[in-house]
Length: 75
Picture (cartoon, rainbow, N blue to C red):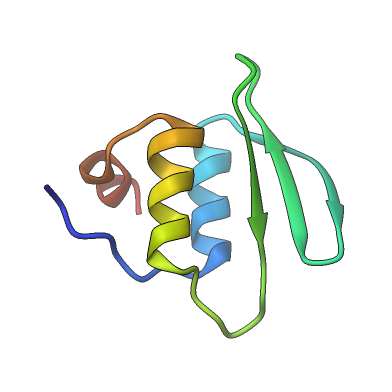
């Protein structure tokens, strides 16, 4: 199993957009993304802070539906 990397929210957003997710709305620091096949996720963007590893793992594996190795390759 691949370790969960430390990643800023902007880098995760770039990967999401590369996978076909589109930002449908943002309110404050929360950005909502949806994929044409119906998958959804929300990313909180806080300047100068990385995403917590547990939250990143949840977004990548449950919301996006890819494994951590594939995510690391997309970075």
